[in-house]
Image (cartoon, rainbow over all chains, first blue to last red; front, side):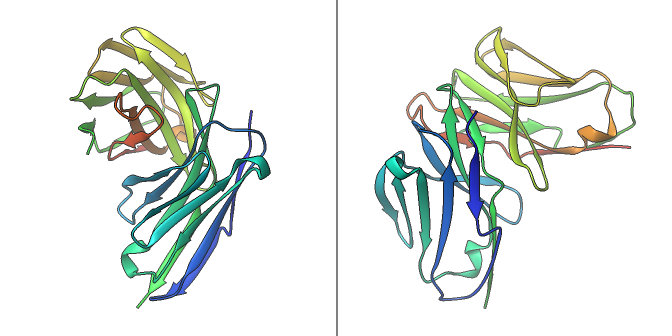
Length: 108
Length: 113
């Protein structure tokens, strides 16, 4: 099966800073998703992005499928952005493989 | 909100006891999933279902069984709980309107003493 690796594992920012989270995957994937897990444990789907670039407010994501990586950009970070960010990719069409996540802490 | 609830939300049990976790959805989605989340491992798929009575194993299925007798309910059973099954368990669905996107329930924290 595919391997999904995320970096950095931990990130500490001051409010207002920008950040880039990276996701590498070991094989061609048909589906790449980014999730945010808030400090209360709730998992929220941020992006479905098998290729190209998408933006949603202060967050944007880019996937370069031919080079097997995806990036999540957070601009002007806020304390509410804190939590763990996961990328996940499908294999066998219906099973998601998750990376181990990037833990983000944003301080005021 | 994809209308997913999990019960119980918290449970403490003893080694060797059977445990059943329930995932309930209100929108008749075909695909449902059970994951466990552990520090250092992210989320790992236990079992999934692609319809009533249609289930398959994920990457960490040993020690777990599932059943889906109705579209809206997907049950995860630990026949004889072990301390290694202490974890947070998440249910997820794939929306028929957005088949490439998964939506998660609130999670169940299970502690096996």
